Every structure is written in C-alpha cells, then in structure tokens.
Amino acid sequence: MDYYSKEISKLIESLSSLPGIGPKSAQRLAFHILNMPKEDVKYIADSLVSARDNVHYCKVCCTLTDQDICPICSNPKRNHKQIMVVEDTRDLAAYEKTGKYDGTYHVLHGAISPMQGIGPSEIRLKELMVRLQSEDVEEVIIATNSSLEGETTAMYISKMVKPSGIKVTRIASGVPVGGDIENIDEVTLLRAFEGRVDL
Ligand code: ZN
Image (cartoon, rainbow, N blue to C red; front, side, top):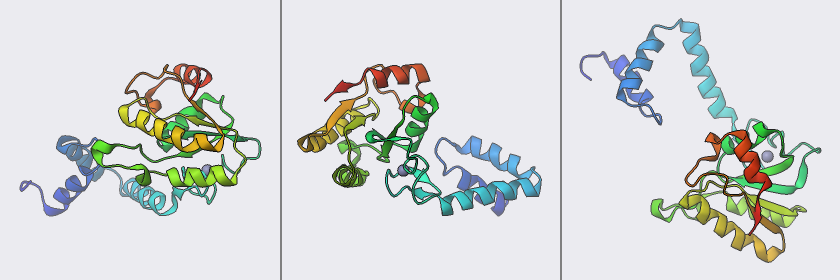
C-alpha cells in the first residue's frame, strides 16, 4: 500500500482487521471516513471506545451489558426458574425480539469445538453451574445453534445438568441444521421454542 500516505494506510489496515471487512471494503470505508465531517468521525470513535470501556459480562447471565446485572436478570417479572442457554448475546436478542419468552438466559460466548481447540472451560459453563447450584431453577432450555459445535455443547450441558434433577430441554429442529439462531425469522424461532423436547 505504498500509494497511500502512512496515516491512510494505517486506517485501512486497522479497518481490515475487523471481521467481514476485506481490503477493498476497508479502502472504501477509509475514504468514506476521510470525507466525513470531523465531528461525525469523533462520534463514531468515541462510541467505539466508550462501548469497549463500559460493556462487560452480566454478573449473573454473562450477557454483554453496561450494568453490573443486566435488565433481564434484574427484572422481577421474568421467570427466574427458566434459563435459556444461548451461544452469544445476538441469539439472546433474537429470542427477545419474539417477545414471547419471559424466562432468563445464560450466554456461553461460544460453543465447544474440539476441532478449533475450544473446550468446556473456554466458554461460560462454570458460571452456569454456579447458577444452578445457587438459584431455584426448574428448567434449562438449550438453544445453542444446530451446528456440530452447538450439538456437542448441548449434549455436554445435558450430561452436566441432568444429575441435579433439573429438567433439560432442547429447542426443536425447526432451526435448520447449521443455522445460526440470529439469522432465523421469529416465527421459526418461536416454533422451535414451543416444540422443545426433553433431553
Ligand atoms: Zn444478566
């Protein structure tokens, strides 16, 4: 990238480190940014830094939040006896969008993947077990993706939770194999939830 000055090259390089942004998109974004009003660029930059500084895991369910305990965990109107286990915060958002689930969540931040060297201790499973021991939980609904990793994780959780006597269910196969929960429409998602089966 010798044809651009150092500052421009640096901007393109840093943008292309983001997922889904190839060198061409990075160039397009960089020149777009350079043509934007300064205050708009500052607003974006400040949002990035502020979100990264202030967003962390909820102390209960591990979802991303800017509070100690997220609004769902701290809502007394939610059914705290039901915990839906999802892979990430975007999956939680997908279920929240349906407006039909009133239980709580647990966000794993990933799935077990022996292929990628991600074991049970690399995702937030320990935190789930701590919750099951300290809270009065009746049902754990496993809503991991229907990919190989998602299924492996579901089996692992089922084996881990079952001895405690807590009911374990898995969302139905309305979710296509390999399908990411966040990309599934609300009707299919609801059907998968309502048709969940005992594990
Ligand atoms: Zn929470």
